[in-house]
Length: 100
Image 1: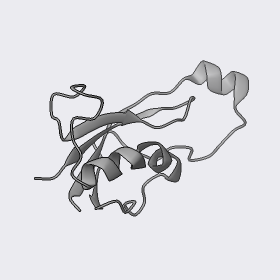
Image 2: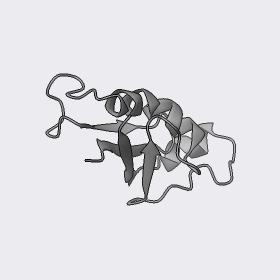
Image 3: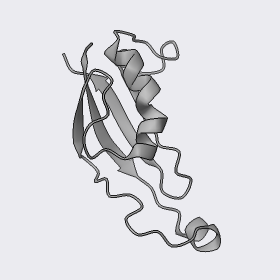
Image 4: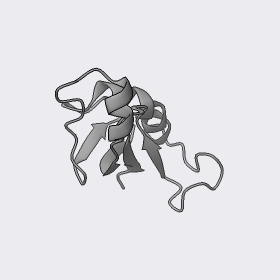
């Protein structure tokens, strides 16, 4: 399996939705923009958010196994994907790419 690099590209935060719908959570997301993780194949990197991993792991698996051109021409780099976690209050966008 190929090594995969995951880079935290952007974090968003919707305070209006948090205030209206969410119970208070401490340390809901400790990821930092620019932070990088390296996956050995399809193994979740140590310290990586479990919820975010649930969202991105199928794409990591595809790329780690040699798949490319996800969604037929979507990405300029065929060996990459831009995926967000499923947190509706503070989504994080990740660039997932094969380490050459």
